[in-house]
View 1: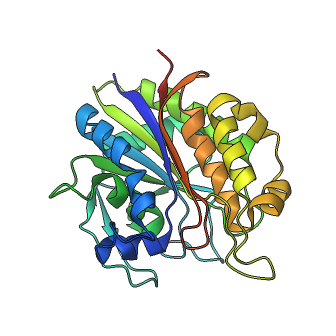
View 2: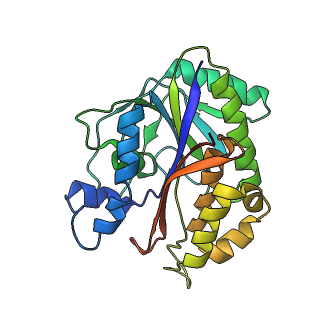
Length: 280
């Protein structure tokens, strides 16, 4: 049977993609940020997951403001990376698992989540920066991956509560797959940041750290927050933290924290990393 062996979180800041491309990991500005990923990379190399479900938001590569699905699931055997405007060099195509994706889609729809299914899907920095942060040290991708895109751009947006429920439904979908697969779920985006307007550059470290703690120990707290409140505290792009709730919903009620890290600012963003497993 397929099994979720861990949940990860990471920011997907495009500047991180450029920093990796330029080899700046040891630069004083970047060094502490990248060091926060080393324990996670070591764990991943030890447990060797077969597949990653990457929860991210598309930045106009597949969906523009005139057509934005709330939840879109990749159902292809291959995902091509493309540059949506940040000048990040394209990474090698990421292998998918269409059979597993269709199983997820069918299970999620039976659980009353109306997924948009994408048999062709390009992936932007929201997907590729996390993939490279965790696996760029390999000569080729050591696992397959499935994109799960969440609308955090065009209002009205879904909620933290809905994302948490989707994570629980995703867990049921994975658990019901008959083949033996080790799966990790990656919640990406955030933490606090805003790219435009009078509050551009806002970072609320206190709120970021509170979110990290509550997502670990009391995720129901996050489900009670309105989107307006999250954006008031964390900035308009800080709403991306709701995608972490899909990862958290896919784990058990109690979790073990194998690693956590927070660093600010990175490209005017509060950046957090988590590695969680079901409590033993």
